[in-house]
Image (cartoon, rainbow, N blue to C red):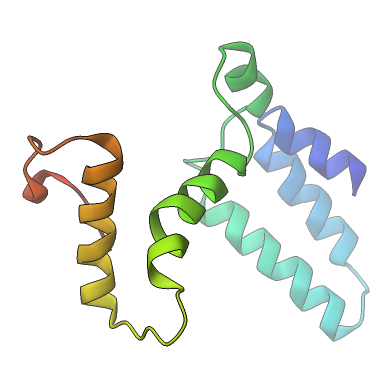
Length: 116
């Protein structure tokens, strides 16, 4: 598995997928299905997976820490209080407003922002 992580870190999605296919050969059904799920993910995300090493060299943050902190600040503090219940549409609107508040950005029109 270390080799697969190395390939992905350096942008070698094809090598990682091929290595996983080799690894899955002859395995029982359950572990093989898990590896096949990973292969499908890599194949579908191929266009988005780049070289993390290259991004780090350029000074971009690599990792989920910033995203996890943003979720904690923007979403969890507001939406996970005791007794609160949310529908997705209402929750999305509250997240949009909270993002505007934290960024002090009341100028960018909501229609230009993408929310699922």
